[in-house]
Structures are given as structure tokens and as C-alpha cells.
Image (tube, rainbow, N blue to C red; front, side):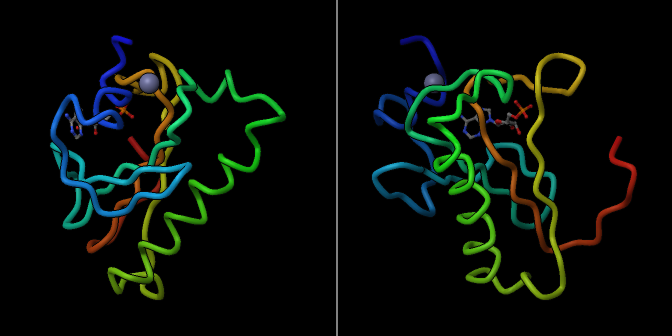
Length: 113
Ligand code: AMP
Ligand code: ZN
């Protein structure tokens, strides 16, 4: 499997893991855009949001639930934070294994760039 994030799941590439269970892995982004910038990924390889099937809905919901849990743990849940999932080229996706960006610790503007 040539997927970068599958390699991180399989420990073929090192990463700074902050949470793991049977279904999801969360690790610090290598190029953080906020004081906290964590990527939350399913252990199942799904290339883009467009490839999510009905059987994957629990796991996709778990990405968001994990984001909220980590935001609480990091202490910025009440102040607020940003979660983002980029899809395909125009959406800014560069790694084709779905991931939720959790960013916190600063104020975000809207609309996103
Ligand atoms: P996206 O552009 O939405 O596909 O996000 C991909 C993210 O993966 C970017 O924020 C990158 O900084 C991050 N990234 C790429 N390689 C690594 C890596 N080896 N470890 C951690 N984060 C990475
Ligand atoms: Zn993958």
C-alpha cells in the first residue's frame, strides 16, 4: 500500500500520535497551521469524502467525535476551534486517505481561504 497515512497507521513512517483505538488514529500535523493541529484518520483506507459508503458512517462520525474529545482534552473546546476535511484537488486535498484536521489555540477567520 503506497498510501502515506496507511504507512503511518502501520508504523512504517513515524508520527507523533496523540490518540489511537481500533478504528481511528490521531497524530500531530507535520506542518501545523495552528498551535494545535491534529489529523484524525480512520484506520480503514478511504481515499476521499466522495468514497465514503453507508457502512462507513459510524467511522466518519467517530472522526468528529474524536475531534471534539481532543479539543476538550487540549482545553480549547469552549473557546472554539476549527475542523476541516478537504476533498480532491480544488478542495486542497493532498493526501488521499480521508482525514479531519483539528485546529485550535488561535482565532480563525471565515470564509476559509
Ligand atoms: P490535506 O492537504 O487536507 O490533504 O492535508 C494533508 C496534511 O497532512 C497536511 O496538513 C500535511 O501537513 C500533513 N502531512 C503530510 N505528511 C505528514 C506526515 N508525515 N506526518 C504528519 N502530517 C503530515
Ligand atoms: Zn490509506
